[in-house]
Amino acid sequence: MNLIKLIIITSAILIIKNCFGQIGPVNFIDSTFTTSGVSMLASADLDNDGDEEIIASFTGGSGKLAYFENMGNGLFSNTINNIDSISFTSGVAVGDFNQDGWKDLVAIGGINHESWVYINNSGTFPLRETLDSNISILVNDVVVADFDLDNDDDIVIIGQHSIDLYRNDGNSNFTKEIILDTGSSNEPLECLDLATADMDSDGDMDLVCAETAGVVVYMNSGNAIFTPNYYSVIAEVGWVIHPFDLDNDNDIDVLMKNSSGDVKWFSNDGTGTLTFEQILTTVPDLLSMKSIDFNNDGYEDIYASYLHHVSIFLNDPNHSFDTEIPIYSDNGMVMGPVHLANIDNWGMQDYIWVGVTKSIAYHLNQLETLSYLDLHDNNLIVFPNPSSDYLEVQGKQAINSIQLYSINGNLIEINFSENNKVDLRNLQNGIYILKINVNGTYITRKIIKN
Image: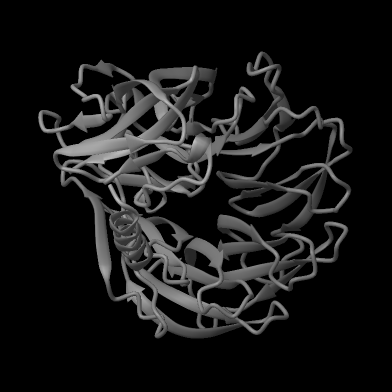
């Protein structure tokens, strides 16, 4: 292939890449009732092998804390790894609580409304340590951050009638401090959803909470002393909260879904003061939302689950969110939490979701794969990608062998010619992994048959 053709192909693919986001086909990590009742998702490299596991808390009488191991390149073991069995586990978050370089976990829930810390011992979690056994009714959410800026991870937990800080001394010894409870609150206090963000751009993490008082921002003094600020202009109950820069002005706004299903935008003036702008849409069954620039246009879009659907709602210069792009729908499945994580180590966040009746699944972000030219790994070229029939593999050094694997890690027999042209015609549409031997060095490439 001559240089002119190469430039044309490169330009065309990059145009596609920059114009519209791409999501790969659904990959079910588990689609049995083993994964029913997921209450919250998290992700972290639990075994320090360079890729992120998917962690889940499970509610119900057979509740548990568990994870699925990432085998590399976005391939997951379909064996669930149980960390602990606790009924009605309602949430999980990740932090390095003893500063040993291994990711630890904190979980909440249980019949008696408790919280527990699990210290990571070289990829295993042998002990459950009780963090608190005296939380107000219904433990609803947990977040982790270095709230007091002393270089260790602290914990904040909301119960039905409380919001509490657990200050870490750096050795996983925590001191409980009440941020707000029904005795000290001037408003009816029922905390339902919690997130963290630096709302006033002062370098410390604040708390953003959906409550019976609506949107409440707890401003951090810098030493984890929090002051509540109330921003709902009418009496409303906040159910789901998500802070992100909705209007592209370099500060963090807030999106809240209330009990009526109204999804409301509260803009930030740059100092952390919020103003209600408008109701963007009404989705009564909206359960979970995150933000990501899906179509690479510079605006953060909404990745959300509701009823039987997982979708992207596109942001634009008018912030209308009128365009919905379905990701996955199943009328026989009630959707649960959504999550974003770079699970295939290709530089961008991938889309993870749960069907609470069963199933944990993900879609790889193909925005990261559409350009065939990679500047690393010996300038190895795989093109065209996606392809419906053939693709070619070229590099500066000799290619000794090419192997093809399914997304589940199974070796597939393929035909390829002396010029390293790979025949994809007999393959089902989907995502595959090429394993290429270049002078004894193995390089992997994610490819798409369409």
